[in-house]
Amino acid sequence: MTTSFAANAELSRCFAASFRSSCSKPTAAHQCSRLEIFSLGHPSPPALCVQQLTSRRTAASARVFSMSQTDSRDAGLTYKDAGVDIDAGSELVRRISKMAPGIGGFGGLFPLGDSYLVAGTDGVGTKLKLAFETGIHDTIGIDLVIKGIVDGCQQSECTLLGGETAEMPDFYSEGEYDLSGFAVGVVKKDSVIDGKTIVPGDALIGLPSSGVHSNGFSLVRRVLARSGLSLKDQLPGEALTLGEALMAPTVIYVKQVLDLISKGGVKGIAHITGGGFTDNIPRVFPEGLGALIYRDSWEIPAVFKWIQQAGNIEEAEMRRTFNMGIGMVLVVSQEAAKRILEEKGGASMLYRIGEVVKGEGVSYH
Image (cartoon, rainbow, N blue to C red):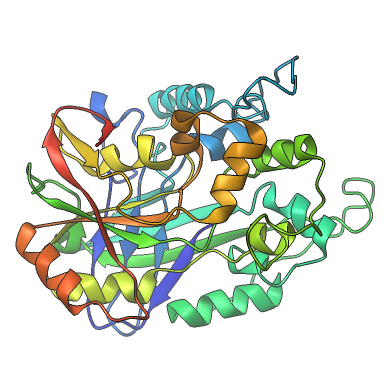
């Protein structure tokens, strides 16, 4: 799970790739929409960052699998080979949204006076499999195990209210468990950043990831098995093991993004989760706009280079499955981009990774 929470902020902001209240009637454009919300209440109410519902999550939670029957050493691996069919997941969301208008985004908005009540839930996913193998449980908890959960909430200035545990003999193997989390918050209706003001020429600012975060681990595990290496082996060219690299905790962007929003000029925000650049960035754009990404405008972390090489994975498949080193993308005006990049500190790396263009989808130059 890559959900982060935030509260006790002076600024109330919410940005969405697409959103609707649970009692609204969906438009055709919304039937397969996915929501990314970063909502912050005024000092008293708790609030949250709810990330986009990715087709990876839908496919995994609904057990939508399409396993390849061939896995030769020469064939390049795909996410579908690993059991996750992004297209099937998107189709599932489309069908569900026809029957339940409030479904389709990872977080739901319920009108509450001049505000929205925002809620979302998610689980960690197959990253847990590596936690079982490595014995590293504190870092995975930042995506959701108690110390990790507490750390994540502290980073986001969010209140941890509690939850429920259950013991289910014979359901999980010894030493295994599952994790999920729920978040709720409030955001003013006039504070939604929904991408409607995005125009061609706006800049794309990338915030670096810490690694794989929590998406694509079904494919990662297949690559690891093919490579013949273990999680205790060193990541080629790096001074850490594969297990350490893969289990790096997800970056929580709450404070950094809030700071950037407070300075003005932020028109849209895309969290790069399942679906990578290919699916996530266009969701924040008005119809008729696309993204041009500048190649080599940031350093791709070694863990992704190893995954691609060891799995013989095509470039397009990597871009649609992984964040490739950029965990969050802000769409900002040219003026804001110049100011943001001039003001950035050494401890807060930011990259100008592209621009908004006329057209559809994501292209690379």
